Image (tube, rainbow, N blue to C red; front, side):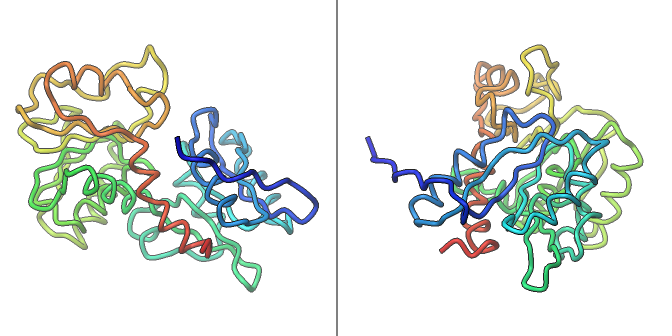
Length: 270
């Protein structure tokens, strides 16, 4: 068993990073990043912050004034809303319309960026599921889903079929993506992936044991990769039933692991 680095004691000099979500019990960023901070001997800690949507603006504007807070990680359901609370946005945020991380800049302003998509693709490639040249179906175009859609196209996915229950949000995303990757992205009329190489769940369905499947599995071809972005539970109902049908499955934790180097660069954790 690999020895874990000793924990850095929390003290008056400790720098803070917050993880904003609703709920937050499932977040994995503290478990992944706090050991990294300890290994780097950084006097810093990542903590979860449970913020409900009606209170998000109040929480974020308050945190911006916490002088020892250096950054925020953002998860469901705040990724689209939080971009409007930043002073500046990276290019990816402008394309996909959502952010999953904010950093305090030297001038005191806050920069928003989104690494969900690049992290998801890095995880896919690392697991041997390179999307280049593939036909991909993506269900859910919220904060993470929109970033994943753009990253799949940037990585060379041949055709991307997307669906969301919010038709206006779906149409807006398709229009933004088509401006950058014309002719390669298509809206689905329902959550029914068909003849694709990779099928991705980017909805919250699967966080709870009683959730329905985000999309049916019976029409997926043999050999199709079924991917979920939910990290806890690790084995969602979708992945269990896909594996039982003989499909290759791809777990949500890979998306966070794939973002780790991006986080290290973004927050200068070297």
